[in-house]
Length: 212
Image (cartoon, rainbow, N blue to C red):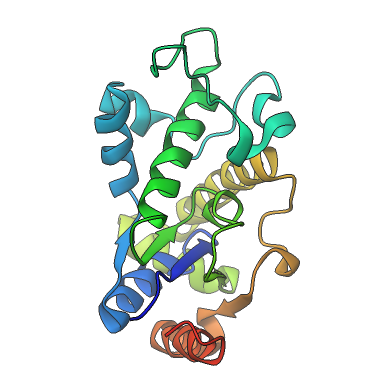
């Protein structure tokens, strides 16, 4: 691969987006980051890992700090010594820390990012290709039910709650609508194409854009 290629993958709950990302990572030999970002953020910031995990992809409960500054231009609550001051809401601090980590990684190598508003945070990076993975509700319920060992009824409730949180998080920090096709280069359904078919189409899109 001659250039740094950045692929971002948004996903509906239970649509198989993480599986698509993992298979794409294997196919094009590019490292994937999902929860790995939490570990890197904890290491970079010195903030307790459990705090970061508990607040992962949750919208800030108060204020509009990042909606006015944006990920690229915000000081992320940094103090004069490069640390993170306590007078900024913890949710916004977490978003800022993860944003810094993403931008640092993307500046150094090709990578695949799953969720966490990556398409927005990295919007000015060259060679960016953004994807959204979705699926029919019936298929998502079945996948969540099997993966978590819960009933279909429980799976549907889980999807509703988790998806509401994810949507609020994305909309809050990006000024855009989560899942809106206008926000992505490519939107795919695992119901229509399957996981492997989606991977094939992403690779085809990257090829046609001259990124790989």
